[in-house]
Structures are given as structure tokens and as C-alpha cells.
Length: 207
Image 1 (tube, rainbow, N blue to C red):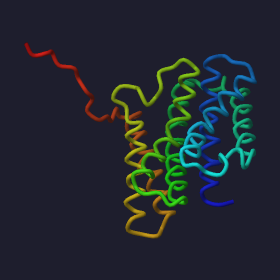
Image 2: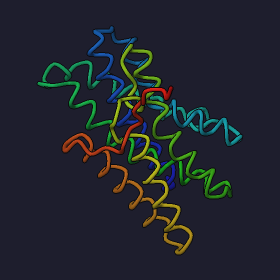
Image 3: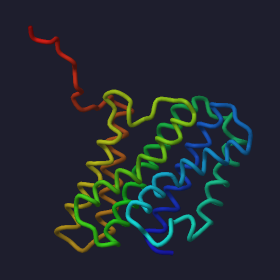
Image 4: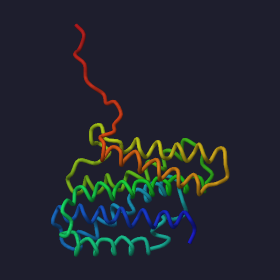
């Protein structure tokens, strides 16, 4: 297994857990769990692969990604009731998945020879689009649209750090690790301490 596929597997599994938690909050049946888990798990990577025109979308090449997502769905289906706060658990699991998925998106863009702008965009897409699909289908406000929270910006800065390290060294493992750490710390700081960037505030029109 390559490093990139390992990152994809890890992000797929953790994102699938968040999808299953969302399905539990919506009180869906087991098939609904499978659907939401798989949608969340592979959504971002699918959009990434289509935009980058890869020969085959990653989970089409290797259906074991779908199997991993289904395992996560079954685990949550039988164990979710043991969690005191599923919304909180979802947020923290999502933070971990975001960190890994951004690294995976960055790595795929590098492997195809793309420049810094595409690397940043693919990192953000891989990290955020699956969760956005999950939230929209489950009729919740997408995390990327929650006012003032560091989510998309956490993905951006994580991908940016990876790209800067990649420009000056050949240690891609260091770049992936730094990307994941920065992304997770920023998202965790937003969840735990309320870190946020300034938001737009409307002003009265001038007469």
C-alpha cells in the first residue's frame, strides 16, 4: 500500500464514521447508514479525481474503500447509542478526517504534477466536499458555512504549509504530517476555544 492510498483509506474510514453519526441523528435504517457513510467517505475524493481527470476515480479502482466505509457504518449503527453527545463526537471525528483528507488531496495533486494553486484547491476539495454532502443530505447547516468557524480556512492553511515545505524539501512525509497537524490544530482550536477569522458585517448604505 502506498502512502497516498493509506491516507485515502484513513480519511475514508473516519469520514464514514461521521456520516454514520449523522445518519444516527437522523434515525435512518441500516441502508441509510451505508448510503450516508459512503457519500461522506468518498465524496471529496471523487470530485478531486474527476476534476484532475484521473484515469479512474479512486474507489472505482479499489472497491475496498467502499467496504471500509460500510464497516464504519455498521460499527456506528450498533454503538452510536453509547455516545453521550453524538453532535460533539461528529465534530471531532470530522476534524480528524479533515486533517487526513487534506493531506491526501495535496498528495494526489503532487503525484499528477500540478502546481501550487491546484494543490491548494484539491486539498480543500478533498477535505471538505464529503462533509458538505453529508450535511446537505441530512438537512443540517454544512460545517463550511458555519459563521466564524475555522473549517475551510483550516484546510487552506494546512495545504499551504504542505506546499511551502514541498517547495524547499523533498520530504513529502514531513509535508503530509505538517499539513495534517496544522489543519487539525486550527479546527480543534475553533471547536475548543472558539478561534475564528474576522467575518463580513453588513454596513448601512450611505445616503
